Image (cartoon, one colour):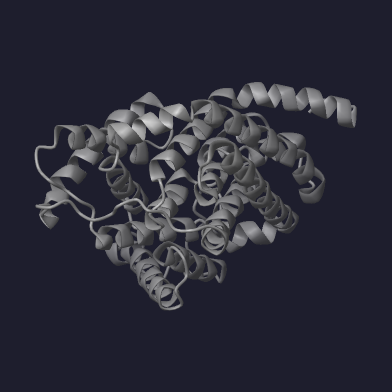
Length: 366
């Protein structure tokens, strides 16, 4: 599950185009089957959860799978466009009013994930550096690289992050449906919106994503399209909407990308880390639910919105869940973006604080 792809088991001559396309085509076919089954079973977020489960299972069984090139990025862009088209001045004002709650909630998430490092260390039998970067709720690739730079086990960090994200994506939508309620955000396409109008808007969204990438902004493939589309919606040169089919394709691409991260080689090498990562993911879900209840009581937000806002998974997956449930995805986006940005900005400060606490607890430097 590390970012590095394990050595391939060649079935075709080296360099043959077919050898490159087959793992992608196989992952896509399995994703479609998984999505269709989940849809028939009425699983929440079926076209993301179904592909995730099926492709992860196949990958762990030893099948060579690969995500659709640029699939996750374009899927994020579609979600960003869908949110940006709904960003009215009234919505933005509501988000601004929640700034104190967003700040407090973000600090709470950072404190919770830092505390989780002290649990992961003995359960996974990992060193303290690995434990800290494995539980920091930021990007998997970023934390794996930082961990390697500071002497941690990058594979263990990537494993725990993949389990955390996949576990939350699998469980949280089901809990939201079971204990929350659907929202009332109007998803009716505007009058006069032509299906082909999405393509120039999506081209604008991709351009905005590429513009944000050099700036180090968190999740540019979601945030760039969202901001660019919000400006487009304010100018309103023509009517545009994101059809249901586009959201299904976005879910499919994201689900496959998540599922194909899993590698049997990594899990076999790190069984205790896998167990510990699963326990930590479960505790983070419980903590998010409890924090969501407190946030809902303090702000009046629906519990489902509060829960999704605090769940430390990928921004896109939680925002997409809110979008599909017709909840206020803009609020969820604001909480999640601030969380990622603040963690990225303060991770080394928190690492030093964690080291100071570790010395007090364990009596030895990290």
